[in-house]
Image 1 (cartoon, each protein chain N blue to C red):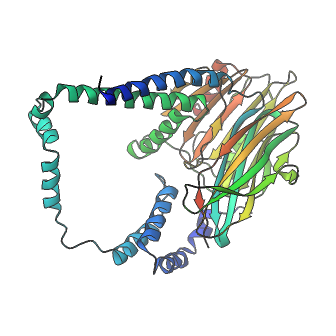
Image 2: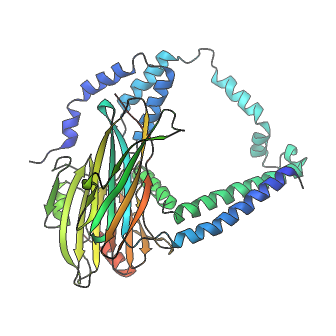
Image 3: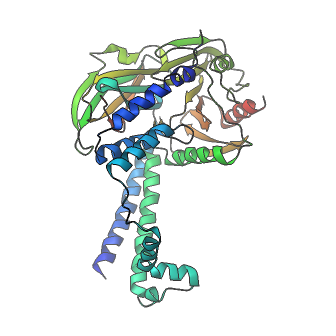
Length: 297
Length: 144
């Protein structure tokens, strides 16, 4: 029988809040800051426990109350005074006299800035070389902010969890699996190259990490797979790739990343709560055609 | 030339040189057996540390999964010591046969207040050969 996990956990919300408050009582400032850090690590753009945050901040207020002698206006004035040359430069739109008097100082700063840019570029290149997709991470971050700023784009959501943790279930098609999980949004390709035959569609949940996999194969030993997983910003998936460039394919308001890996072509993207990946012995054009078929309905 | 300028220029040169080496690393990166892999560590009540592992292979493999999982412990998140190693030879369920992916988790009983991370060797192979990659998770604090 399908189980709606969100409802089952919401039932104990009051009890959970009480436990949180009891847990925070008598904690030191350092412990509370650790709790705040943990809260930040677990929060994302769409899911965060505001009650827990309020409880931590209230506990911090009790342990370490804000000084009554704090005057924001005076602090702002002191800040402006301390960084006067910067504000002068912004307000007057002319070179700061302090900088003009020290051209050598300026050139040293320029070299330092150049070095920082070089290190950043190097880090990005190295990160790509070792399979840590820093560009992908930025893209995911961009997707999150886009979710809040553009309401015209529909993003996929998960409605229910029809199987328990540790269970696996087979389906006749990917769409049937998505329907069973109450996934709202365009996710499943409606076209795959004719040479492939469907082998299996399976869904499993391991410690709340749900994953649906659809696998195809053919008599030549070629392979094609579509994988849909609950997107977790704290869990970085390493995707193997060759030295080829990562192409971007934008359609339906979603950025798809196309990656080549020797004889395989891969596509990956984030759609709302879901991370989708296609991999197979297909051409770049076939991959784009599969993606297009998702949004044709 | 000023000492600081020399230092900065040396740093830029070092960066350029290391970049050349990293280009060599790219060509050695791609795998004939592994598609993608991830692992994470989460904390559950009673000091339990759950290490989740997910490995996707490039097609159906003779074996796919984790060949080893080593759990590290730290009190300050700076110095880490290994506390437990799970090996496929001792725990055969860390791999699956004749399939194209593996997803499972192991539970370790840690001590509340300490931080734990895992280094997972992700593995896939068939009759023609095999490949593995090391994945290191971020640290998580065990709770009571």
